[in-house]
Amino acid sequence: MNEDAFEVPEGNEYRYLVQEEGEEQIQYCRRNYVSPFLVLSRKCMFLISVGVASLLALAGYLAYVAQTLPRGLVEVNTECGWLRGRWKDEAYSFKGIPYAVPPLEKRRWQPPADLQEEGLCWSGVRDATRFRAVCAQVRPLNKNGTVMGQEDCLHLSVWTPSLKPPTPLPVMVWIHGGYLHMLSGQEKGYSPTEELAARTQAVYVSFNYRLNAFGFMALEVLREGSAYNTSGNYGFMDQIAALKWVQRNIHVFGGDPGKVTIFGQSSGGTSVWALMVSPLAKGLFHRAIDMSGSYVFNASLEAAEKDNLEFLKRTECKDANCLRRLTASQVLKAIPWQEYPSWAADDLVDLPVKGSFIGAVAVVDGHVITAPPFKVWESGSGFSDVPFLVGTTEQETDFSPPYDNISMWTWGDYKWHVTNKLTPFGENLTAQALSLYPSSVPCPTPIRCPERLYTTMVSDMRVTCPNNDLAKRAAETLKSPVYRYLVTCTPSQQTNTSDFPFPARFSFHLLDSLAFFGGLKNALGVVAPSDIAFQEVVTKYFLHFAREGKMPEEWTEFPKGTALLNQNFSLAHDYSAERCRLWEENGFYPYAWIN
Image (cartoon, rainbow, N blue to C red; front, top):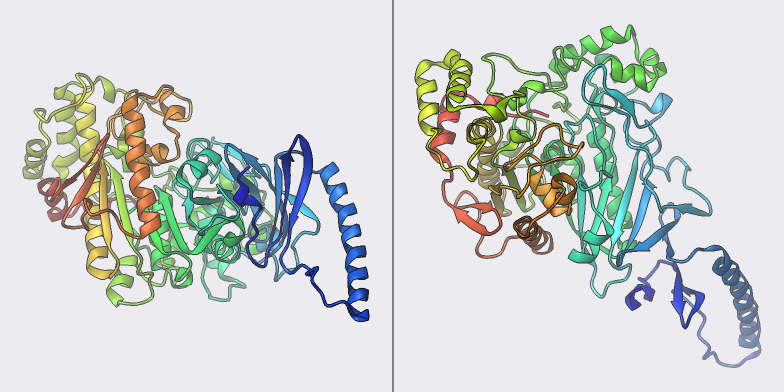
């Protein structure tokens, strides 16, 4: 155990079980002790006597704690009570910490409530050595998916290499992805670990937030009782509540509340953007990393409430009281996954069908999100002006491509599919696309090249090029630096575990986040030196950004340069600009990823 762990920040208490000369002891550190150097007067003698008696009582208590606290555990005092965490792999972890009142019964589809204000803090010491339930969800996203998780899920976890570092450590708050419908902040290989905290010397926070219908259902009947005459975006409110907890408590874990980076991937990246433009989140974070987030975020509350009437119809409910009496399984089974508003978003991994869109999950509700994000930026106020990093991967949709046989495609198959999908948008467009994405494009492997080029085309149109525009608008608006990266790494192996629906081979969706969290082995089965080199590149720059609020000199701000992250770092100017012009000038950005 680190020696510095036994030092105590002012105003806080810690209890440790330590190993010293082969005997287990408790070190109890406390501010405001009675000095032994008192002037000896009758009054002081009385005080000394009282102090001695107190010390004897304290010694008895510590002897009791020493007998009952197992080896390797540590206790810290937060605003809501004592937590018992664990020391493992050269770092401390505290898991399953409540950050809001459980959103059950009448609190379903309500903003998160504060534990202290509701008088629901705990007495004694709360166990924080294990994760708690994930939020209610189905996997996969369809009416036959397996129901899992609970509504009582508003918990967060903290990992830290030191409880009392010489200088407070940067804090990185992770927001998981999963379409705003599934997954959690505690997925193996896709969330922080003790090893990551020790290796990078930073404090990490990850949390669960309400998902799918529980976190984002917008319906007029849910406005009843709302202080803001609004509905939806409850999951974003949970995220804001978690960030407020971080501001009030992270110093207890050795973190710097003035140096908080939020970073999220997929819908977690969308969440990062939402938090940047929400007036409710201002001042709660100081840097932001959006990894493979969505570009389309403009659905009005009224439009979403109308679209979601399909959900209400399926429940056979007429009012909010009925909805709150439904079981979690009944709520999840009533979601229109494949039918419009098509919350499963199956078609977002293929070239679009002309005029076909899916419904919004996150909405412009007028409270959490006061206007479409680009409009918020254009207004010049009401958003967080912090250093911003926008990242995507070159073959985002290789994670779950639209055709089961895509790995067997010939170049003839590739041309047929592109022509079939794009001809409704114009024959000239089809010819231009095949010209800009030709079979002569270099491919890092001798096989599956048509798959690589098709997923690159879909990814450019749906994700990469729209996110270039997002970063460009951010750079035009923010005084803080804006950076852009594209992952071009091809892993040494294809994904081969049950966590992946398809054997992804190229720069697939998730690759950068898996690398940062040390999850490549979980995904690939075996990692090569090239995979480790890529992990080190991602980690180096993310941590520099979190510590300094900017990138090193070799990484210029956008739009002057886009970083290409591979086994090595390189910088490109106007990367894929001609391809992006094709999609932008032909009006394809409304078909970009949503949610």
